[in-house]
Length: 209
Figure 1 (spheres, rainbow, N blue to C red):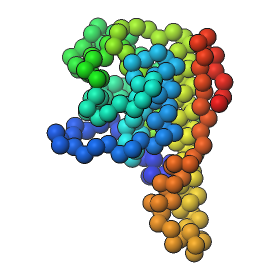
Figure 2 (figure 1 turned 90 degrees about the vertical axis):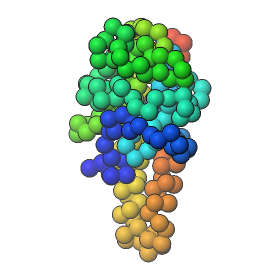
Figure 3 (figure 1 turned 135 degrees about the vertical axis):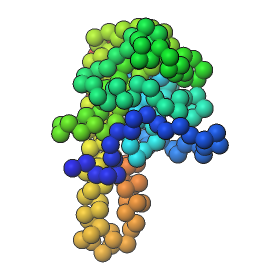
């Protein structure tokens, strides 16, 4: 069973106060999935949301600051309930999102595509989404690539969860490990967990890096 250290999907981030504290440093591997998705799908930006970890919003080159992203992702709830790629080619023509006014870095989102991060047991662990400032349909190659990146994110989340569980079990049986705070152990494992990254070339083919 997935550890509570990973948890379940949030249905969008809760609104924050005007004087909200600065976002904690994103976990590098998961932040890389958002950046990779934005790059591979030629999107304005992408996000990955996992309960218990900071949401990460990234362009194809860098993480976006809090002030540039919406306080609540209008698409996350729909994405979490979908199977396969959930796509909104034109937000202005879709009654669910026409009035949302979702903007990123001052630019209104006009199209969206995302995947629920759903494990083999059917549990939704989070969402991965890409956002564009023009209306468009993804190509079949881009849909396939987005789904592949989502699969790799799921694998990374589950690996992290398993490593944390093993660390906690080890702490129960090893006096030396027990002296190390479990929170520090979990943090160290989250930093070091390896993940497979798919790189997409200009022709749309993938290779493991």
